[in-house]
Length: 189
Image (cartoon, rainbow, N blue to C red; front, top):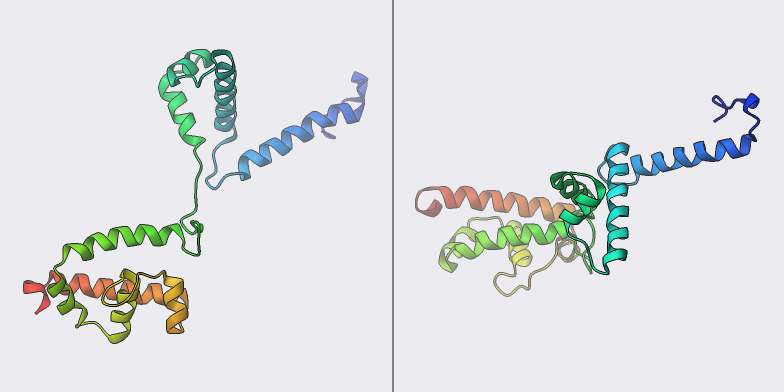
């Protein structure tokens, strides 16, 4: 604002500077306010489409369709769809999900549980017997095998006197070994 201010135009500097300050703050928020950076011009397009959507919702009394928003905003339907996808919330996989467990823990569980469930109990017992005692213990606690209830990596770490990260590493090593053993002819026997 200081560099562009022209006193010959007979404006007060404070009046002139407010616009530039507001613009700089909005640009900083747009550049740094999201997990994934989105260009400022795209965020401005998104703001315009969201404003049109709010206005249409107020006029219609219901949520407008994407086609209605696109027509009112003077944009193509695919543009509006892409812009609305940008407005969806992004969550960290390390974020806690209503408890001491991260979302990534649930994703790993789902994928790994499906693989473990696909093995027969006899085959699983034979493969687990070929792991080290520590690896076997971590997997049994993690997936609720044997007489253990399913536990988070943090819980396993606390009970075994190791860090959550070390429990995760042991789990990874054990699962990799199980995959190798299971892929050998006749299940690694």
